[in-house]
Amino acid sequence: MASNNQRLTAFAPIEAADARVLILGSMPSQESLKQQAYYAHPRNQFWKIVCHLLHGTCPVAYSERCAILVENGIALWDVLESCRREGSADTAIRDEVPNDFQSFIMGHPRLETVLCNGSKSYQLYNKYILGSRDGQGLPRQLQLMRLPSTSPAHAVAFEEKLEAWRAAFVVAGLIK
Image 1: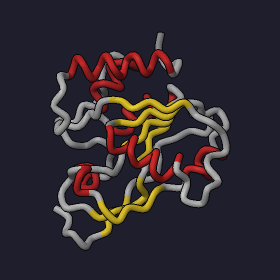
Image 2: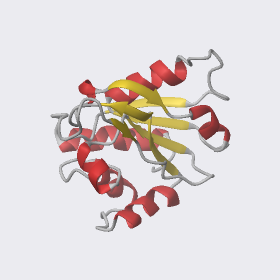
Image 3: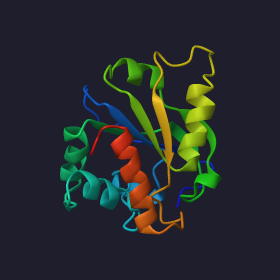
Image 4: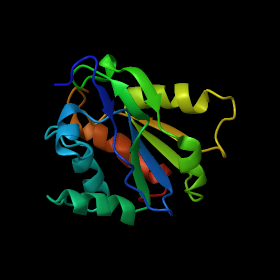
């Protein structure tokens, strides 16, 4: 577990230049940071949901999971570049620094939709990106949707989460 004074740094995005959808978390969990992989906690349902919707089955290999995202025009990143946090709870995040979304969006001209994995990523995106610290905003308007968190801490039935994510994937044009 990270100490209160240790600055945690997020991962680089999983991306391709032709991404149409960006899925955003807030900050990787302690388990994800330890394994250096997005959504590495065994009870996090992110990969189970995404793979089910896009691929049917979920490969064991992390690289194969990431390839499913890229092949489907999805980028994966976190709102925060770094923060301080005791443990993994989003409620413990403090002293946060956001990622550079202006550059990211400029580098992904086909990007149309942002899907926030949970309330904290949605809140942080609104605060730092849509609220734009320098007042310049984003290079273009993107569709924004908040989805139920795939975290095991978000006590909602898997089927409910799956249906919400399915609906968002339909709206984003990822599935029919």
